[in-house]
Length: 439
Ligand code: GDP
Ligand code: MG
Image 1: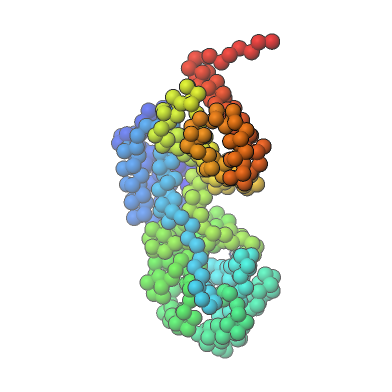
Image 2 (image 1 turned 135 degrees about the horizontal axis):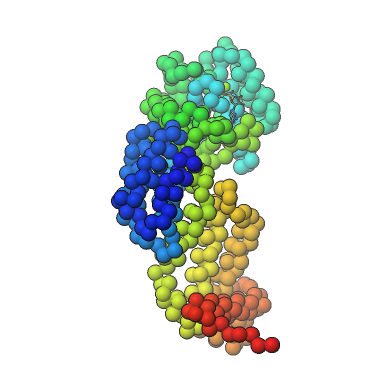
């Protein structure tokens, strides 16, 4: 997918703006790349149309090239296509949360059962697994072994009991043990058939589950979206889990599931280890598909700057050295937003790593600054000189914000440093009024 899209961007090199004409060729490449990634045709059609419409209507952002702009539009639309936000698991308001897993044979249900138990255990929830695949004794053994690995109890009743009865007994046992989450593994078939659907319906009736998650193999491409749709119509599901994303799947499944079935992908499996289960992040997925994290963040930053309607106003303030605490706060917040964005983009290969510790540090110091600025009077915010001149004011701010006088002094000094730096910067841009250093 990535290489196909690469040629789309390349075709825009040297262009000034995106037009109806010059996006025709790149859009054709995008269309081909999506189809090759096994995204279903109707989804591709809609996608290409939406992107084309937006691309033509988009204005010029100073310093951003048309190919970069198109990357950004495609990325935003990919994220939307995949459901936008992370779709969290739902938990029961009272009593145990019950999760029923369904899916064809070999897609990774049994593995996911244990992975999910470990995942929830890490969130402090106690779990119990129920072995509902009664067709192969080996399937029960497999779950028992995996259960031991993640140290979660497994309820089994052998192969002679009907799955719905196992569900009932397991549920009782779990309630007796006051378990937070019950996860039931079920038997798959090679393909959809009536006996499987009937069995699942019976189990569902007994369990009254909080979540019914269909496990699908990413390697099946657009077939995955069709499966999610069918299972949803037949038994009613709440979402999907996409497995084997570590393999050489072409990504089509991730792109189509939500759009085709209306149900979100909630979790993804990307390996055989028990730890290899994580929430599905549409934005990270889009970034991986595009492999262009640096371009995305660049365009976003440029947009951020554009969005500051008062940018000119700000410039004037800087020129006249009027940059005050209100501006300071605005600027710092914008930078903080970029920081948390880079946390997401940092997951993408090629992007510089910003460590979570660094981000936490930045967020913490922003909180401290905000606390101090909050207790300033409007005059103090607009005239930082008042604070520079008056230790009494600084003392008051320290007391009211619960910070030290030293921290307040630091903040004031920081503002004046920023004024100087910005003035120098603007001067340099205007054509060089940076003062020469005398020796
Ligand atoms: P079930 O028939 O749906 O219960 O599938 P299983 O849980 O038995 O898994 C079938 C095979 O797929 C096993 O060999 C698993 O180790 C493997 N598997 C499951 N999930 C993943 C995954 O996310 N990545 C990889 N590479 N293999 C997986
Ligand atoms: Mg199984």
